[in-house]
Image (cartoon, one colour):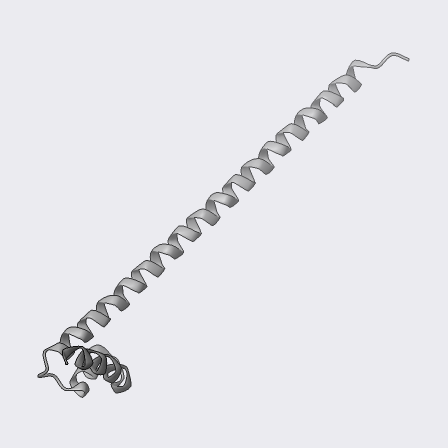
Length: 98
């Protein structure tokens, strides 16, 4: 029984459509992977900025403690740290002076 031209054409079209679907899925996966990478990069940048800000605040705290003429209450007021957060670094710095 001979295969009609229409059947051959339909088969070829289905094959091409399958390949196109695979390419679209590959593209979607690539786009998804790029989105994940970009999201991770953004999160890393945000985390780095937050860590930098915290390190800067800690350095300001240490510098204020080292001046010896600023009370813990004033340091707490200026930095937003609690008195308890100030006394531990002050004790460590004082122990290093000895």
